[in-house]
Image 1 (cartoon, rainbow, N blue to C red):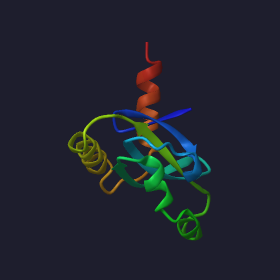
Image 2: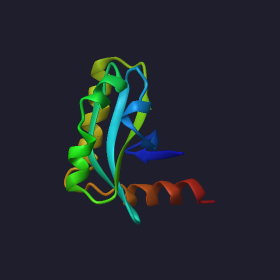
Image 3: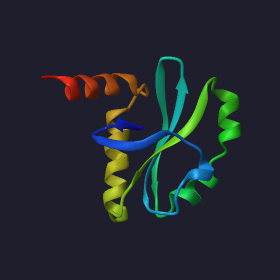
Image 4: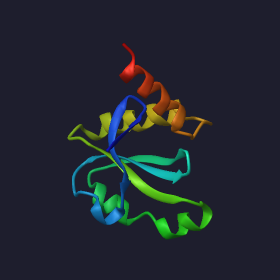
Length: 113
């Protein structure tokens, strides 16, 4: 399953920290609840696995009903390019953390004739 965040298709969003790969990429921390997804944070790393181990999901779970998991975009792009991806996503979702409008736009674009 994939999820579009910005213009990129991320793997997930049902990936737990222990399943993250030790590869470079961009990650999104996603809060899922009935009928919607919320983007909690986005970042990049040389090791998605190590970054995932540094995030306290249990603590976040106390603050949010529903489930919290990762969506990842594996890429060998250099750090500067990954930083640009993160900034673009942050700008797009500034003040609007719901991913559903983005999903609906992508779905309508994907299925339009």
